[in-house]
Amino acid sequence: MRRILANPYAPAFALAVVVVMVPLLVPSPFYLRLATLVFINALVVVGLNLLMGYAGQISLGHAAFFAMGAYASAIGPAHLGLPTLASMLAGIVLTGVVAYGVGKPILRFKGYHLAVATLGLGVIVSIVITNEIAWTGGPDGMQVARLWIGSWRVSGVANWYWVAGITLIVAMLGAANLLSSPTGRALRAIHDSEVAAGVLGIDVARYKLLVFVISAIYAATAGAFLALFDGHVTPVTGGILRSIEFVAMAVLGGLGSILGSVLGAAVLVVLPQALTSFHEFEHAILGAILMVLMIALRRGVIPSLQSWLLRGAA
Amino acid sequence: MLTVEHLSSRYGRIEALHDVTLHVAAGEIIALVGSNGAGKTTLLKALSGVQPIVAGRVRFDGREIQRIAAHRRVRLGLVQVPEGRQVFGPLSVEENLLVGAWTRGRAIADDLARIFVTFPMLADFRHRAAGTLSGGQQQMLAIGRALMARPRLLLLDEPSMGLAPLLIDQIFAIIADIRSQGVTVLVVEQNVQAALAIADRGYVLETGRITLEGSGRSLICDDRVRQAYLGVHVDA
Image (tube, rainbow over all chains, first blue to last red; front, side, top):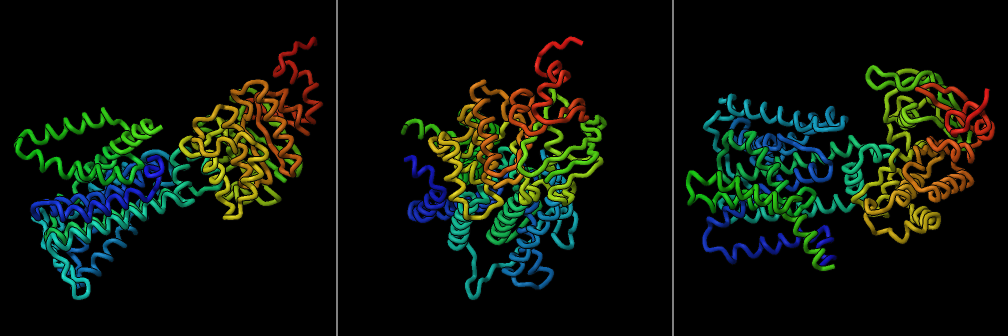
């Protein structure tokens, strides 16, 4: 038990099993759509959790990166005549460059300057999306052209379920690989004591920046997937509330836990659906459930359960 | 090996170091003693590059390093054991040591083995989280971690802080041993007696200024040192 819990690649394999099993078990495409949304959100949260759980930084602007990926996939084909795939990839790269530009001057400092700066970025991106009507369609949003990869037209739940699921598995393997490398060890050291890491020769600012850029790229990829999957984008995609939701998913599942990221995303995507029968009380009940979960499982669902299981096994 | 010339540093408007000049020759153990708040830690931080310098020069092997980033100074051979040990609590003992070898690349198995010979206790606890070790064990780990970087000049900030007398003796014996392996040592201490006893030379720092310097033995015998730091009453 202990060895399974300690294996950094275990969460990705567990998810692979789930991805294969879900289509066999669910009664209707509605659930596949829900699962796809979970995968897309989880992709953002896995990246954000690297930043929060390992580099010890908070981003309140990940919805901005998400939106940049989404709108790049929409604007490229609509206004620039680019193929959708190229637009998506360009958007992801561009988002990485923006994250580098924002993070570079800020991550030299200790503390939570990044949270404030990314909040600012979130506001700017949100305003631009809402007001540049000629490019983005403004508050109504815009249509997104279908994605073609070669002769494969990627559309519909049946396709996107697999694309999002497999991408998430790859992203989780990437995160696990990063964390079990010397770089990951350095990141955990930085999280614990930046001064001690610095006087041992670790370029603290550089590694925090690296993780920030990786997390932005994960978010942009997820944003592009959502836009292409839905076939339209609206400014809600990049709103401040979305950023806070991503942070909530990471904290709920457990900081520093890859599996927790997926679980946090699953809870916050699925629960509102399950609670719709409560109508206007939906959000109040959702809030109450989150509060109870955080009080009962203070370190997040997965880390709390893990330490409970380990204690039981010992 | 290390020369510090007219170094000044400040926290905001408060001057923490004023016109500090000292030198460390290769192979020496130098003790920098003084009371709480004298600026000892600030000086070590300035040497490591994590505390800004207002004026003055720091040369390491003849090369000016005051503008070089902290993490690059480690590659030059200047490594610090920070105040309060600052081991990485959630990481295992072995992982702490591996982080210490960050600048060294892959050929570190011999170093790891040597650290485990110097500190057998670390070998016993190699898979335990560093945060669960006792204060003395954490100090040994912090020193071992710094040695993994193969320092040529080791900066030690208050290695005896919070330790029992028996452990303090052990730590200072280890420091003497580290020097005998060819590593130059600059140790900052409030435990004036123990530090001066193993030091070739010492400096006394008071409110950010060097007020006395001399051989370790001569400083221990100095009336001003005895009265101020060793609790000995000296008749005028």
